[in-house]
Image (cartoon, rainbow, N blue to C red; front, side, top):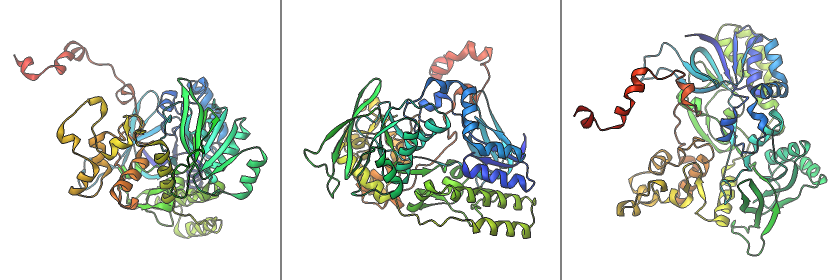
Length: 510
């Protein structure tokens, strides 16, 4: 098995900066990024919430590879610095020895492309896996055209493969405003920006630019439903909300649109860090659960570093990419120093230089705003809307801890069960709720419902959202075809005797 001196996961702003910094210090660096994402993965809204608004060209891997490379100029800089770049490769698992597992001969990563999977060892690891879209469901959110801001960004810029024509954006922070500007520059009509807040949350000059381009802003509003057909969303119904986030009777307005883009927030992609058992803490001002790290971007696990959105995202980072870039440089420098590629004195001088370029930031807590959004959507759309669309679990079924509807399982004991009865046995635990309801166990692996489920459980149980643990992660953290996980044909013996695996042992034994 091959051992890499330094692996960097994620070729965004932070990841490429980390790879370049370490490579220039003399480290052999391997930079891995899952883009271009395969069309089948995009259809499952993994890793981003693409919303089925993709052109057929996403199926052409060569074209997508060219566009992804052209859209990221730092990749050429990384290759010029000697970095080994592997695109179209996802990291589906991370493994290391712990108190309960000591069989590995070193920390390892599970990798896969569209044809095969394999495992590599590493001496040092920098996780710059970015963030994913926060998603709240609403009536009609299962239609094509419901997407997230990161998914829209990828389709509009990285892939140039968006079919959106008329977009409504939920969220008036910098994330929403920059998404609107990008959409306009890509030829998409932005018909409205909507926010439950009575005022715009983002940059004033950017807002003014959007208004000059004819973008309407609807503050103190929420989304009641999206209406459409098998082709996707065709219109949306907005409704004003009062100070309690209750819909105002008679304030409904219908707007024609084919896309609803949620730009309410982003959530750090901590899957790999969780698998490696890095210490993780809840920090609302950084998007929820984030890895603990020091000023050199070192995590609690020796040899593992973080950088960029995965280390914590806040709205100020949207307008200041230098924040993520500097974190990447610090992580790359720390990894190089730990490998002995640069001495302590030189590392200190370089670190001082990087820190002098740091952009001041004042992140604020986000979960109160997220809760306002969810509360308004529940008040406007009700509890019968799916909280988990993959497994078809409604908000009411989640709260009542009901079994999956497709089991058609009815019993007196189950009908008496609810979150309130469960709380008699201890604090709310999303992992336990997942086992009971299957929320978060669908094809997107909970990416579209994790935060919504936690906020609903916290509100119903009266718990502080900071005290609700995150749903745990297990490999593979990306859905993979069986042919990729095991790219071999079945044996002749298996082919001849496969029926035996599906009958009771007593019948096989006679």
